Length: 174
Image: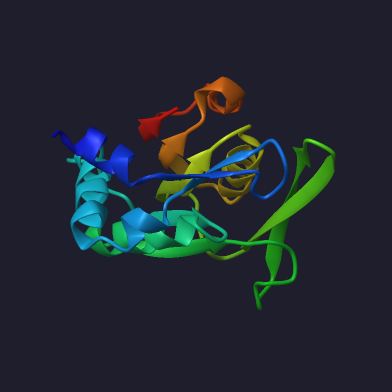
């Protein structure tokens, strides 16, 4: 079995979570299996060989799991992007659209320096709103976005269209 099939077999579908009609792709079986985590990490790192990454930006909260591991392996700093009021220092905020309404993400204003090479990571690319907000935050700080990584891409939601001007890599596509 190849790495992709191995990882796909680890994803657990949860019906009607977090609300009726949604099929949630649960990544916790991958997180609980060191072999699966290493396979996913290696697939992410293959995409970045010979590229210097200064910062890995991970989105709250599931983007922190692989984001911190990627930062360690790439000898880069880790930058959390969080919901409002969760970061203790001066922040920059970006609003983004949800299916019904809006939400906001924040980043520390000193977390990415102008010209630094940045990898943005999250667990799932769905509608693309969260990723687009993270892109805007990093760009506002002067970061050079090398790539956006996702463990899972829900292709039927077309979130990649919001990231058209960027290099996007997703391991598993549904």
